[in-house]
Image (cartoon, rainbow, N blue to C red; front, top):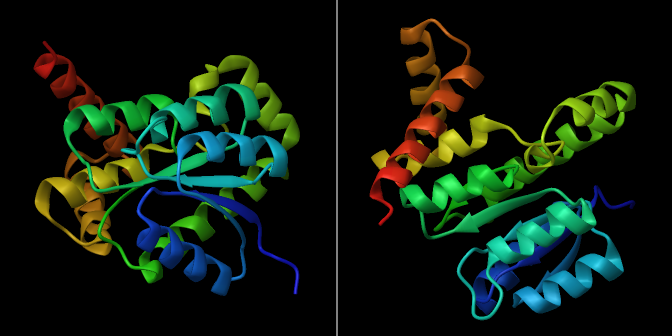
Amino acid sequence: MTAKGRILVVDDDRLVLATVTHGLAQAGYEVIDADNGDDAILLAHQRKPDLALLDIRMEGKSGFDVAEYLRDVSHIPFMFLSAFADEQTIAQVHALGAVAYMIKPLDVAQIVPTVDAAFARLRSEVARPARTALAAENAPDVSGPLADPVPLAVGVLMHRYSLPRPAAWQRLQRLAGEQQISVAAQAERLLLAVEELARSAAP
């Protein structure tokens, strides 16, 4: 059976790494794993995954360091899986152009649909090369082809209100309905507010 896609999973917690790697492999993905940022960058260069799933806080190079390499050098889309969800972390996740931001603890049954959605959007962008090229000319590189405020905003709501992902998604939809704007527009407003909070809290 052909793999659904190649994904690089990076986490310095060996148990989390093994669990996520096994779950994604069972879901049909070809999985490459690394337990530190240096190995992750080397594997990204050698194996050229379609997507990376990164822990943030690691010894040595952080997930943010790896993400900058993937964005600027390898042009590989990435998402984060982290136990940290303070305003400054979320603001940096957004600024880097992550596909999604998932907050630990999560089981693989919750991670796989997010990965599936990211790959679906990746294939959608590849199927529209002319539009993507035009967007790339008019957009800053940091946004990346898969950047989307909605998954990040859902992550913010999960953290802020201790909600499971479906409930956070419903809250985002409700907020958008109350403001009579699109879900994407509401997500962008929420992330801008988080970034403003992060700036005001900085020394």
